[in-house]
Image 1 (cartoon, one colour):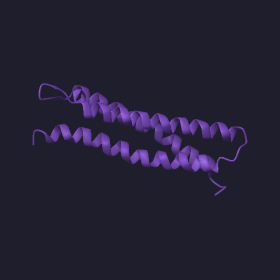
Image 2 (image 1 turned 90 degrees about the horizontal axis):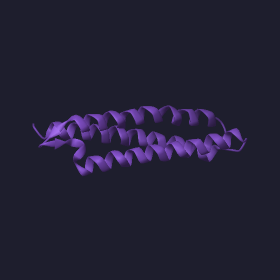
Image 3 (image 1 turned 135 degrees about the horizontal axis):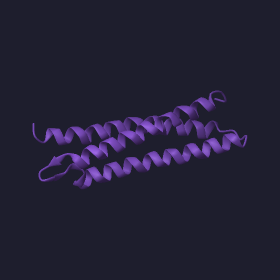
Length: 111
């Protein structure tokens, strides 16, 4: 487990910007899409879902920063790097699934 710590951190770091963009594009879409006289973003569940996803991305970012700082200080980051990559990978699935549901739910209302 001592190998590939840098790679684990890079794998987690590479995911953060696309996840951020996915949330931003979904929020933009939801703010423009009208549904029953108001925007999709006006629905409380959609608003809270996007806020929760954003919070999770920021939590992984904080974990990543902590792991990188520890690595730069010469500490053993095996546990931190593994946790960061695990959370980032799982979050990638959750964010993409949730954003897709927000987009599809507004279309399904009229099917």
